[in-house]
Length: 67
Image (cartoon, rainbow, N blue to C red; front, top):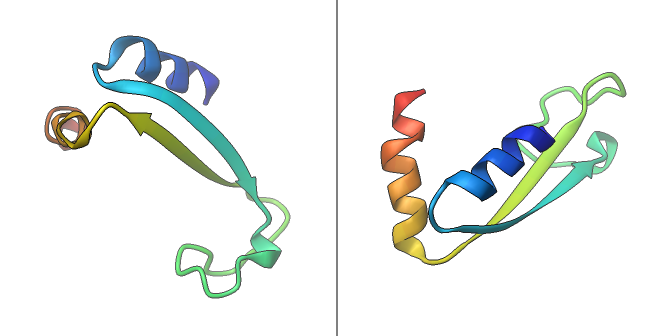
């Protein structure tokens, strides 16, 4: 994951910073992404800081659409 974050921050225009949070699935009651929480899987949330709305829209249009 750290390689991906560094790649994004160093090579994608408009990305400034990222914070990674590991969530405790046992405490994510009501989160629709956590269907059957267990201690085997890790639940990660990444917050990216971008320059502006256009930066994230460009990323979504150019990068995510190719996945």
